[in-house]
Length: 180
Image 1 (cartoon, rainbow, N blue to C red):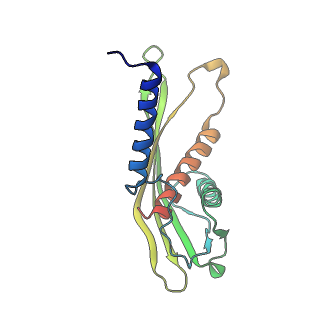
Image 2 (cartoon, rainbow, N blue to C red):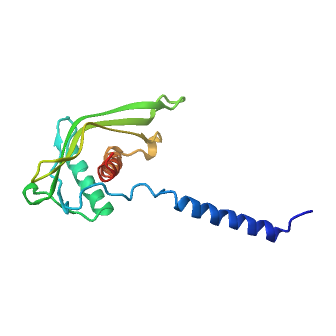
Image 3 (cartoon, rainbow, N blue to C red):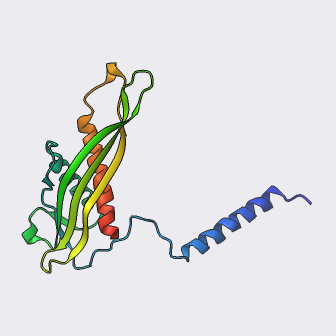
């Protein structure tokens, strides 16, 4: 006996509804929406990162990107003065390296770069000095495509550093808020 298309559709919809009901009752949630910081933290100071590399102004890009990410993902008041905050995010950029990892087989020019940045990061509750997040070897690693088209090539360093700062900030803020 052949089932009608209407019955097949009804069975499929029923399976979807039952599946959704089962998954919603199992404690699953969308990642990136939790906050593991204490409720007493309302204001976070993000002073300028310390740059221990030779990369020009990289600390400014990273600091600004982290501030923007906190503002977009959480409801904390972000300030630069540690004396006025509930918590202070300290960070030192200890190394920044980039290496070509993929080359064009015809021209031999690099087409993909791997950027690696190490940082020391810790979030400290100002009054109690309790460490809320700490990582002395925070590693950020990302691959970026670079143009090999010589006529349309332009200096890609600034846009690449902006993308890297955004990606780094996104990972760092998620790790802090989700307590990884």
